[in-house]
Amino acid sequence: MAKLNKVAQITLLFWLMKIIATTLGETFGDYLSMTLDYGYGFSLGITAAAFLSVLAIQLFSNKYIPFIYWLVIIATTTLGTEISDFIDRSLHLGYTAGSILLFVCLAGTLFLWFRKFKNLTVFPIVDRQKEMYYWIAILFSNSLGTAFGDYLSDIAGLSYLQGALVTSGVIIAVILLHYTTKINEIFLFWLAFIFTRPFGATFGDFLTKPLASGGLDLGTLAASVVSLGLLVLLIIIAHFQLPKQGALAEK
Image (cartoon, rainbow, N blue to C red; front, side, top):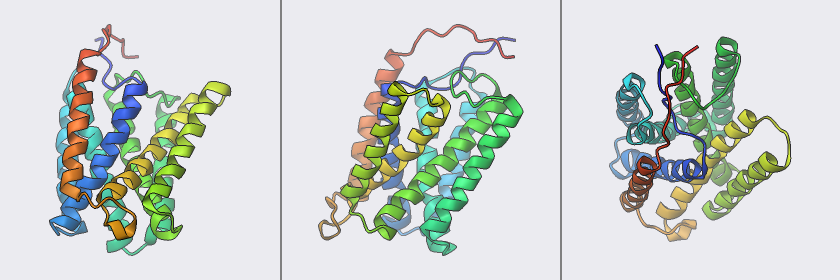
């Protein structure tokens, strides 16, 4: 039986929404664990439950629905924040070891995905099992991006704005490589996907941290509300721009 594609096409709108979603994930994750003082373990449990709930809705929908898809992305960015913080502050492994651990998890997921399907194509996706690999890889990449962003600020000693500039520089380099070289597009996609996370994370920290720490001191709740408002606007645009997708046969 033919099935429809389930995931977003990789366009400029996709990357704009991804960056805002990562900023929202960082600020809302900090709102739960720090502002509300739920702690990293309890916040991890809350965000994991939310992630599994919206992921179930996404997996059992029969087509790409922007609102549901981006809810899962937001859930992965928020859960990724809590996973990174839990590894560092509850397990006391530090951001360096945490980044290495999450990189190994991401590489392992992509390896198993490739071994199963002989490709790492991220669009279109119609197979539910392949979609599971897709979301697990996204979760690990967002967690890795969070840990790396915190590494830049806490270990490398960069200010939040400097960290955002460094990661944005990497993203620009990836864009240039995409248009000027023949480097594998899937490799560049995952590289960009990982580094949009620390960009969003460091930008989120820039919005929320105190002025004395190099931030704008907007607070985690205010920054989350602003990010959510922008993302909702872009999701509405995505619904109006939803391409007419024919049934894609599942092989």
